[in-house]
Image 1: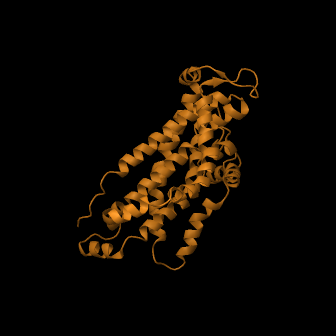
Image 2 (image 1 turned 120 degrees about the horizontal axis):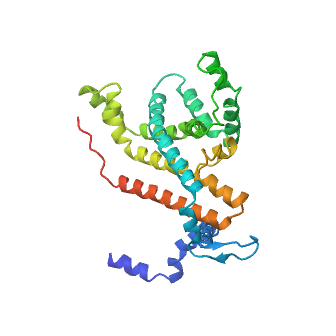
Image 3 (image 1 turned 90 degrees about the vertical axis):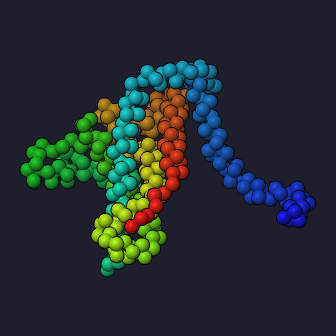
Length: 304
């Protein structure tokens, strides 16, 4: 041990810098594209552009944060984001697991089913949003189907009613993410030894009960991973809202990211948009800390 340490310490100093030289290009790229813009946005949160965004900003301290606390649109978009989070994440955690269990069965043609469930993932959100907007139209397929069943003569204002707009956008997010999270679960299912299911069958755990006794405990890391990924994605949702509702009607489907876009690129309030972005960063950071805290808890032992 001492010999190896002395050999390491006797190497030239530039040899010790070799690993950091390999990391340097990536660190420079991250610094220019991630860290510097983040620090710049944090600085702009304490400033205001008085007349023109081409002029240097004016330092105003915590005025933007005070405005944020009294901004009713911000609190409404925060509520919409939380509703989006609570409505989408549980479905995207549990439903793809059921699909993964189904497509993990050794039956003929199962690969075609896997491809069919995964197809929405590879479709561009722009194309998907436009297609779903046609489906949600007043004379769209959904309303025609409801009229054919005599459930609604006038149809449902899916995207033009504050009552249905946010739910309609959430359905698109769920449809788009099912296949992606199904593949993550499928990778975890295929790593579970079949001997465990055979032992469980001998002890009387068969059918769907074996998945409750074996699959769910062993898939716990994947469940946590999908929960965090889907939560962060739901918090940052933008394309669906931009394409389908533009945040309306009456801000009923407006989320935090769309509000940042609106303030920054439509109203040209760059500093206030950075303040909203900082609040969203704190929300995502909280979700990540909760995930790390839960992930440190010991996994439940399997007992038969």
